[in-house]
Amino acid sequence: MNGPSLDSGTEGIAWDLSDEYPAADAPEVERDLERLDALQDELEEANRVLVPLLEAAETLGLDDGADGIGAARRAFALVEEARRLLSDPGVYASCCLSVDGGDEAALALVGRLQAREKRFAELAEPLSQFLDRVPDRVVEAFLDDATTRDARFAVEHSRKRRHELLDLSEENLVTALGQDGIHAWGRLYDRLAGTLVCEVEVDGEVRTMGVAQAAGLMQRPDDGLRERAWRAINTAWDAHGESCAAAINAIAGWRLEMCRKRSNGRSVHFLDAPLHMNRIVPETLDTLLSVAREARPVARRAALLQARAYRKARYGPWDQRAPAPLGSGGGGAAIPYREALDIVAESYGGVDPGMGAFVRMMAENRWIEGTVGPRKQPGAYCTRFARSRNPRVYMTYTGGASDVITLAHELGHGYHAWVMRDLPDSQRRYGMSIAETASTFGETIVRDALLARAETPQAEFDIVWEEATAAVAFLLNIPARFEFERNFYEARAERPRTPDELKETMREAWTAWYGDSLSEPDPLFWANKLHFYISGLSFYNFPYLFGYLFSLGVHARREALGDAFFPRYEALLRDTGRMTAEDLAAKHLDADLTRADFWRDTVRVLEARIDRFEALVERCVG
Image 1: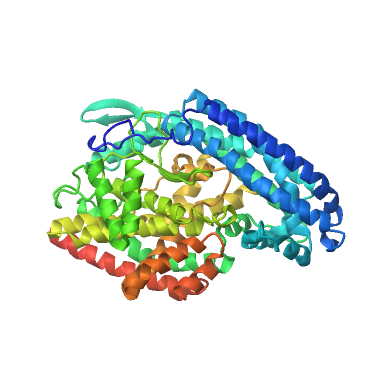
Image 2: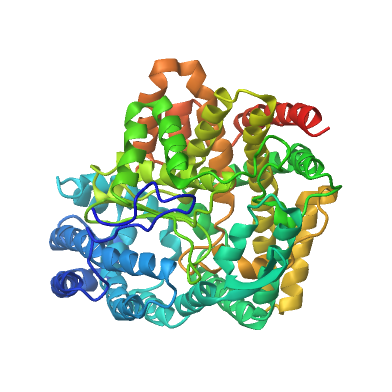
């Protein structure tokens, strides 16, 4: 494979997308779109049978519904194939735009996909309505076939929200308006994030760079540089505060209006959709957040210890990705990309050789994007192509220790997808809360492996530092995001909020969770955190807290189960697309997620780790 060597130094290398498509405007893309159009024409024919049955779907019998059951099975096969053909060009374009927000060919492809996405959603809606609204006996007949029986969980889970359904014409109208409504605001924000620049003073010189590059500076051991980078990023976003406020108000307003429209026989709350998508019940979320509130003293202690290591009194918002300070044993030294890959591969391989082989395959195939670029979007993610079922990892690798952990995190997502690659499509779509299990587990095993080979207290300090960073991020920052978003949605129900009001709501959330461990809040976090602008989902925050504590619970069973652990872990991952989170925990962990015991046990494991960190701060920093 042509391209940069894996030994190219500290900076990560570019990924290779050519085994999916050679370019955004390649003939292969055109062929897939033509095939997609043909499938959608066939789906339209199947709908000629389904649509008339929807008028009396709730009372449909087996005899008068026989033709509908057959049409639904045909539609199901067409929808699954069309979804793959629609997904892959979209994933490809998104990957291109993550690296270069101004990629004209990718932007054009996104534009071409919009009409097809709208048509697909409209054509798939009759099948969805049929399966949601018909009596149980008709659903059972639909599932009693080799082509559909694997979709049982997906169908039954979807039916839990059937009380929210609008009629077919209304659902189609919502879909049609969404492309130039809620999703247009999300695209606007993505474009802004990919092109926004800021000015940061580095080594006495003011440099202009992309916000992703500037965010990379917040992984440097120079406390002043991190603060300057943070303030520069916020200055850049503050200049676009009105635009960001318009976007976040429009996205939330759209969702709130949909809740009102869907409140037919039963009131629909703005948390209903994310809870359903995450496949957890409200009692689980309430218990999770209650235990997180109990754990605030532990996480605040971690934040204050990190501040102390930098010889200051309070934790700053620019410290979220700070490395272990220089003088503690070289924690600020850059880690070359090749070395980072080796660290992750060896750590994964310690759980099972197949996990280590997966990491090396990802590197050798160049399925990881790690370059630094002025037009790159900030953040990191893992995605996958539907037809090949091959994952891709995106990040900006600059050599910081937290980059190694980010790499481990995203490769965990990739491994999760990899072990499910032979399952039917309907069983490979899982809730976001469970989606963070393998990724956070990946972080933990990398830190554990590094800790096991640490030869000095200083080296041990550098590793445990990352555990403290995770505790602060997951137990303080993530709940602060949730509290902001919940409070914002409640206020937005009355009227749109101004940039100053959004800043104040964010200040309050940070203060409530960080308490006196914080030097100052991050009032613009609502603007610079892209998770608030993902138009396809809301409350992309509590799944991280769930995944963090859930994965610690999984990890705690590794030592107890010994050789039996990995088969159970792999089985857990494979079941994530066909179970609720509560059923998954009951089957594989013998745990009840609606009770505080499971979550408190994991916090106790974490508390012992923070105790260890405190002892190392005493020893290495003084």
